[in-house]
Image 1 (cartoon, chains in turn green, yellow):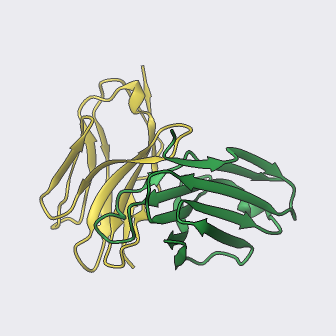
Image 2 (cartoon, helix red, strand yellow):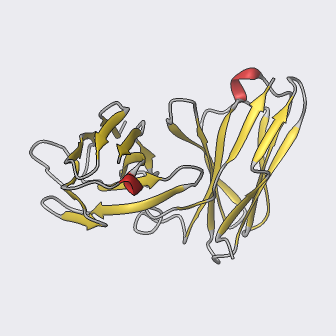
Length: 116
Length: 111
């Protein structure tokens, strides 16, 4: 079983559309994250949830809205997609949000989003 | 804020060559330092870590030593293989507990 799974793996869509990326972890972790990786491989944190509560919300457009129905799931909804949203989005999880454990993140395999 | 800076890629080398990827950090306290690796088509995986000065992290033939005096955590491997082709990320956990990644260095090893 995949520890952190995200779907879809590839997503191609037109500008202006609304899309969602789903993430699930079966590790029993309390904390989940969304990262964005641009074309130059730079990885930037977007959001983090601990036990369904938002704890990190970096400077991200309001068009991006995370939703955590339970601590095993963290979905990312994007409204009014723009060309600049094209990137690879990674979901990750860690045991909890403390300094001693959040260092070890378990990543999903990524969702490559292409906005045309 | 606290951050890491790593050497730009891409890096291309032959099998059995020596690999070094430089990483320096800026931090107000004493962060923990990490190297993550991303193989093609996969998410990142923790490669090694060091939590205090002079600690050496090692895994899969890779090593990195936490150097407080030079604020560095350079990644080294004595003899690379084709299977080491990947993107390598230096990272730190500063006082605010948010794991911060460097820009990533793409390494390609040719047979």
